[in-house]
Image (tube, rainbow, N blue to C red; front, top):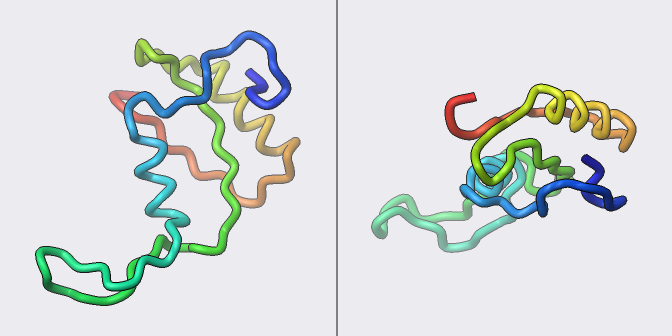
Length: 93
């Protein structure tokens, strides 16, 4: 499942937008003049806008998320010296 080192796997594209959405909440950059329907004007950020993100795709395009792929991603994150692991699996998993 090593997406950086090659080998058989699905391309690391976010087919559903779930990973992109949750990542922006966690580490979205500073956005000046953000508002909601012209209310609540200010600067918007994710929880840790200066964080470095390591993402690992574990679900295939057909929506299957195998436990073995999830465990392999956790092992890869540990090997990559990731300090915080937050798991957010889309759909019904």
